[in-house]
Image (cartoon, rainbow, N blue to C red; front, top):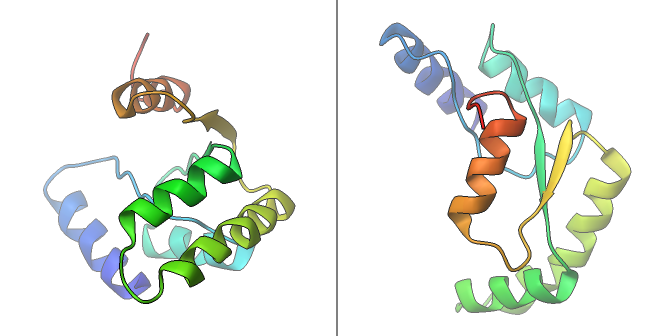
Length: 116
């Protein structure tokens, strides 16, 4: 995954892009360093999206319809605890009962990519 990220970033940087949005759950500092190494020279801003466990479980249930659905639903609480302990984010945003557009706009403003 990190080699692919490194190649993708190199292609974008060569084309003149200076920003990359990576949607991913980063569980620990080792994984964060691997991302940083793959996207060399980039400034990182970590945003954690939050919602209630019930909401996240419902979203996973709706999205994942295969045989691993229950495994993914069970992973929600575990991943939430991991992210709580790791506390890698620069800021958090609730995406409970909010539109994707509203959350994305707030994230980009707080990350200083857009002015409000």
